[in-house]
View (tube, rainbow, N blue to C red):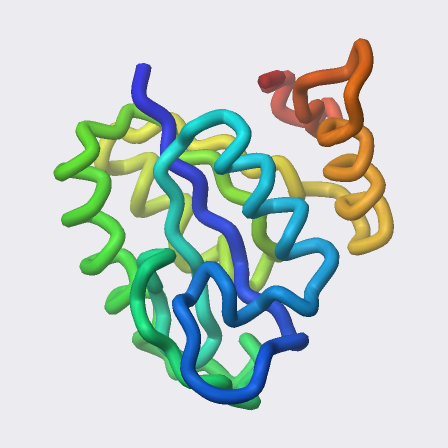
Length: 155
C-alpha cells in the first residue's frame, strides 16, 4: 500500500518566499506533521488556505489568510491538484493531518474515488493534536498515531 500525507499550513510563517516545506517553519505543529511524513519516507503535500494545494518544493510567498476565508470552490481546486499527485505516486491511502475546515471539502471526494482516507485529527482538539504528534515522534514504545477511536483506524 502506498501512503500519502496531507498536512495543513499554519498561521506562523517565515517572511519572504521559501519552499513550501520551509515556509511554515516557525510553527511547532507544522514541524511535527512534516517530520512524521518525512520520518516514514512518505510523499506529502501541504493544504494552504491561500494557495490550495502545495508541493513541498514549490516556491511560496508568505501570506495572511485563514482557512475560514477560503472561497466556495477551494476544495474543488485542491482536489484537482491532489488527484494528479496521488495518481503519479500510485497512492492507495491518504493520511490527513489537518483541521476540519481543510478536511471537510476533501474526504468524501477522496473516498468516492477509492482512496482509503485516515483523518487522525478527527475528534481531537488542537492541543490534543499537538500532544498526539509529540508522543508519536518521541523515541520509545509508541510509534504510531492512534485515532480518537471513532473509526478504529490505527497506524
